[in-house]
Amino acid sequence: MSFFIRGLWLAAAVVFLPTIASAHGFGQRYDLPVPLGLFMLGAGASVVLSFLGMGLFVRKKQDSVDYPSCDLLTSPLFAWMGNRVFLSVIRVLSVVLFCVTLVAGFWGSENPDKNIVPTMVWIIWWVGLAYVCALAGNLWSLVNPWSVIFSWAEALYKKIKPGASLSPAQPFSERPGVWLAVGLFLWFAWAEIVWPHNDLPRNLAVATLGYSIITWAGMYLYGKDAWLERGEAFSILFGVMGRFSITEARTSGTGRSEWRMRPPAVGLLNTDDMSNSMVVFVVLMLATVSFDGFTETPLWHQIRAGLYEVVIWIGRDALLVADTIALIAAPGLFLGVYYLFCMLMRAMSGSTLSTGEFARLFVLSLVPIAIGYHVAHYFSFLFIQGQRIIPLLSDPFGVGWNLWGTASYKIDIGIIGAKATWYASIAAIVIGHICAVYLAHVTALRALENRFAAVRSQYPMLVLMVGYTMVSLWIIAQPITGG
Image (cartoon, rainbow, N blue to C red; front, side):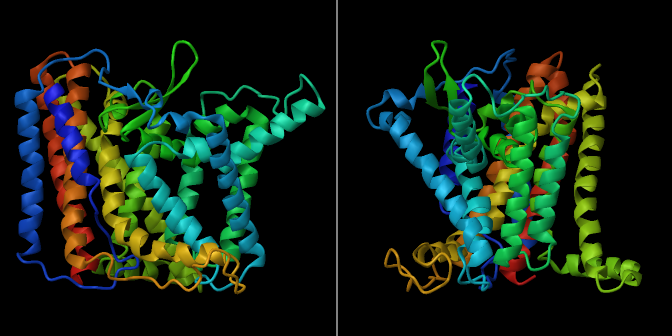
C-alpha cells in the first residue's frame, strides 16, 4: 500500500504542473508529431500497465481506510490559517464578491466583456474553484456565500429572539437522497452548455438570484447543514472533488479543528455514504463535462443536425430542444454503460453482491477521471480568458472605473501554447485514469472475498477505463488539432 501511496504523491506532482485546455478561449492549432491514434494507443497502454502493476504489488486486503496525514495547523507556517480573524476575513470577502457580482449583473454594463459577472461565474468560480477544491482542498465549504449569509442571519435572529432558531429544522428525510441536488446540477449544466446568451450579465444575475432563493429556502425549511449535505448541488459537487485533494478538514476527538495533509485520492476510498442518488450525481459530473467537450467535435455537429431535423416541427426553439435532449441523454448513456460494466464486474467476480452494490462501491473511482478531464478541458480557458478578472476587478460594472490600477490590462493569449496544452492534456487524462484504476483495485480488495475475485472483477473496469481514456483524448484533440 505504501508503495502506491508514494506513487500517487508522484502522480499528483505531475498533474499539478501547468496543464491543459480545449477550445474555450484557445485559438491556435497544433499538428501532432505522430498520428492521433498512436497517442490514444499509448495512453491506453499506460492504463493497462498501471493495472498490471496494481495486480502485482497491491495485494493486501484492508478493512479500513488508513493513510498517513499531518495537521498543518500545528505548524507555525500554517497556524495562522486557522485563526478566527483570518477565517472571518475570507468569508467576508466571499460575500462581498457575491454581492458585487449580483449588483453588477442587474445594474452594470450589458457588455459581457466589460461586466465582471460572466468571468466571475464561468471562469473564476466554476472552473477555478473546482481546480482548488480538487487539487488543494474543499475551499467551498469555508467560503460558500449562501452558507455564510444564512449563518449571519441566524446569529442575528438569535440575538433578537434569544433561544429561537431561524430554521425550524424539520427532519430532512433520507429517502430523497441527493435527488434534488441532481436536478439542480443538471439545471446548471444546461445553463452552461445549452442556454442561449448565458454570458449576458443580467441573465446570469437572475439565475444566481433564483438559485440563492432556492438554497436559502432549503436551509430555512430543513436546516443549514442538512440542506448543504443533501440539497445544495455545489456543496456536494465540490465536496466530492475535495475527496481527491491533498488536504481535509477534520474535528479532533477534543473538538479542535484540524486541517490535515494526506496523499491525493485516498479520500475517495470511503464509500460508506454512497446512495443510488449519489451514484447518479457522480456519473452526471463526468457525463456533463464530457458532453461539453464533445460539443466541440465535428461528430457532434452531425448528430446535432440529425436531432434538429427530428424536432424541426417545434419551430424557432428546435435547436434549443435538440441540444437539451442531447444533454439529458448523455448522463443516461453514461449511467447505462456504467451499470452494464458493474453487471460484468459482478459476473466476473462471482460475488453475491448485487449490481447496485457494485455501482455504489466503485462510483467514486470515476471521480479522478472527471477531475482529469475537467483539468484537460478547461485549463487554457482558465489561464487565458481568466486574465479578464484583472481589469474587471478595477471596473466590475463596466462604467470606466480604475479602482486598483489594472483596468488597462490586456490579455496575453500566448501564456499557454498549443503544444504544452496537448501534452498536459494527455498527462491529466492518463493520470486521472491511473488513479481511478488504483482506487477501483483497492476497493475490490476490500469488498470481495479474495484477491483473485478482486482482480477478475477489475477486467471489465479496465476495458471501460482504457476505452474512455482513448475517447477522452480524441475529444480533447479535436479543437487543438483542428479536427
